[in-house]
Length: 117
Image (cartoon, rainbow, N blue to C red):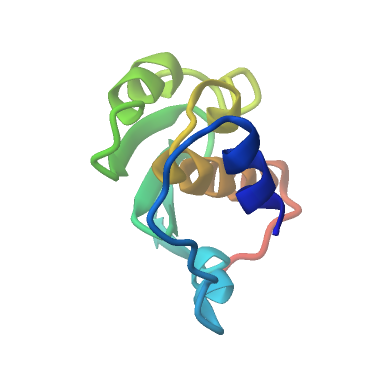
């Protein structure tokens, strides 16, 4: 496998490599949208991003527990969705990846092209 080759090239020790269980990838694709009147919250895995529907301003980011989320919170909250940095550009954890998925859905909803559920 590609990862085994890369680890060998870098002389990086590892114990074992496990494939994702069938259906595990689909868990990463689950996005839930909740309407709170003035605000919309989008949850992707354990990450939540809430924005003001009229202004598009990000009002809260929560979830995770990864070390890059506090930094992303500072960089994104109080900014308009279309002016905030993408989480995947500055974060490198699974939390940042899920926050990026929530961000993309929020941006689509704000622009009027996302699915409202």
